[in-house]
Structure formats: structure tokens, C-alpha cells
Length: 490
Image (cartoon, rainbow, N blue to C red):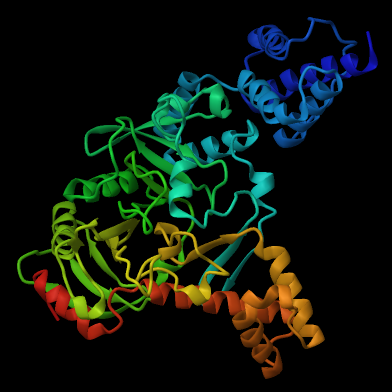
């Protein structure tokens, strides 16, 4: 047997060993799995000499098998991701087995034990690309979390972003339909989902392969129905935190430019991290004239948001619906707020929920995607002077204080830092003049121990100003006037 083929056969045996050790591959299925890998890669079945490599990282195992397949002429460089996906999918539990193990853990040990196992499983079978995510720069500045996403391309055009999330041919209907589970056309052979019930409806939970925060996942409606927010949305979100009280869950505004890129399918985002918005204090309390059992307050936050707290689901949902129904019809042309015009509806809310000792804490963020001649990308979007840092949509996650910035910034900002050290901004970096000047002033202030730490502070400051751009009300008086229309006294 030629050396490259001998190495591949050893790696296939190693993959089966890995599956038994980390992915609950039953020993009775080991031979079956090995033969399935031979078949999937087009390898002439062969014995190996018993030697295997004990891998403990899925990404390393998958990389080595793909490289060996290329060396043997069974795949070219463009097919390495497909090779990885095929092999790891074969040695993973089936969807039904995954769901059954999740349910067993949930029933026996509770939601956190079940989700911890499920997330770790999705890392172990290489669906969640944690080794890639761990390379993304991340830091806290100005009360916000800032990350630089090196794993995904930047979408500066909203239409291009939307088209990037469609699948030609109509099957699956979109990128988050359950029909993606095992779908080879998008290398989803390792995708696994688990069943959940929200407001009596069939939904499922899965993790994001390139998550933005700890255990970042999405709850998806089993029915392919468009994103929408109504009173039932608030009940579903509260049901979710009943099931997983250690997670938060939120819903993107169901409009282009301010919402998620997959607007064709109803879904929510959540996970196991406390985001800055959830820690924001209430700066002004109001009370409802009609709804008992809740407290409502305007948050001390750069965006426009209020928090509803209560233990009674009906009361919390009623308060949130009062705000939503009033906001979608609210006009204030003098502030640039137009609820709807010839281009459609422009006002929507982004609700997000956690569960605490005080009950459900539902934060409702007011959003508008109206445009103008001065701001063609959105009046309440990042303004043009900040587009060099962030031009993509300011969605649910950024609105809660976790900013996902484009990967290009890692090298570009390093170059700007070098320019600050030299005392002159290079011509090719002229778009970063604002960043250069402000960071240079921070360095000269003597408050930072390095140019890099000053740059991190500057990024946090810019992200804070972008949040201020998204605020539909710039003063507490206007927010209070709006809440009075909703039936609240303050």
C-alpha cells in the first residue's frame, strides 16, 4: 500500500477511535462507520496495522484527514471542507440519538447540564468552530464588549448580505430550516438540533458554528414562516427562559437594516453570556395605569430601551405589547421617526429576556430603519463617519452592547497604531483619520499604557456613539412622552 493511502487508512481508524471516545459512537457501529467513511471518500477499503493517533481536537483530526485525502488524489483543495464534514458527520450521533441524549440529561440533571453537554458535543464534532472563534480579538471598553470577527466576510451591502443567506433550488427553503440538518449541499452533515416547545409550538434549538458569545445558539420555528413580532413572541421568549433559565434569548427586529439577515424564517438568538444591556440600570421608573404586577423603567443606555420586570407572564406580555403596538404606529417627523410610508413599515422592537429572582426581565429596544437623503443607510444606523469601523446592520447583539466588527480591522488598526507611533497617518489609511486623531489624543493624555490600549478604548467609544446613533429618542423627556402614550405614568 502506498504511503499516502496507508496514512489515510490510519487516520480513518483514528477518526473512528475519536468518535468512540468523544462522540458516543457505539463500539458495535465502529466497523460500520469505518466502511461508511471509505465509501464517502471513495477509498478502496483497506486494513490498517492497528496504529492510530489519539486526537483530542476535532479541528485537528478533520484537517489531517482532509489533507491526506488531497495527498491521495481523492479530493482537491477546494473540497477539504466537504471531506471534513463527511467524516465528522459519519462518526457523530444521529439527530434522533442526539435529541434523546439531550432529553435524558435535561430530565435527569436539568437544563444547564443538557446545554453544556450539547454545546460541547457540537464543538467535539466540529460543527461549532471554537478553535476559529477563540482567535477572534475580544475586549471590553467603555462598558461594551468589542470583538473582531475574522471568521466571516464583511457585508457592507444589505442586499448582498440577504442574498448570501439564501440557498438556490428551494431546498432547504433558507439557511436555518431544519432540513439543513445533514444537508450536504451546505456542509451541514454535522449539524444537530434538539426539540423545544415555545408557546405550545414546535421549535428547535441549535448552536451557531461561528457564535459571537458564549454558547451562542438560535431557537428556530419548525415551520418556515417569516420573522414577526407580536404578543405571542413575548410568551415564546419567556417560555424559553423557563426551559433554560441560565440563558438569555432575544428577537431581532423583523425589518431589513436593523434586524437579522434571515428575515424569511422566524427565529430568536440566545446563549450563556450576560451582555452589557442586561446589566444597565434603570434611570427612570414608570408605572402602568392598567397592568398590575410589573415594574417598568427607562434604561441608562445609549440606545432607546426600557425594561419590564414581573413574575406574571400575562402582565409582562401585556406591558411589552402596549409598548410594541404603540411604537409601530408612532410618528415624530421632527425627530426623523416615520412609522410607515410608501416604502413600507419602519418601526419595530427588539425584545430580549433573562430570568432572575425577580421573575422575567424583558428589555424592549425601540428600533427604526427609516432612511433619508442625508442618511441613505439609515437615520438610526451607524452614521457615515463610523462606517470605516462598522457599516453592517446594528442588530440584536450589537443593540445589547456586544459589537462584532469586521476582520479587516485587525490589520488596518495595527497599521493606524504604527502611524500614531510615527506621528503621521499614511495616505492609504485616510479613511481612518477620525480614529487616528482621537486615539492620538488619548495616547497624549497619558492615561493609557500603550497605543494599543488607547485604540481599544477608541473602538469602545465609537461603538458607544454608534449605539447613540441608533437611539430613536435622544432625551428622556421624549421617551417619557412616548411611554405615556403606552399607558404608563412617570
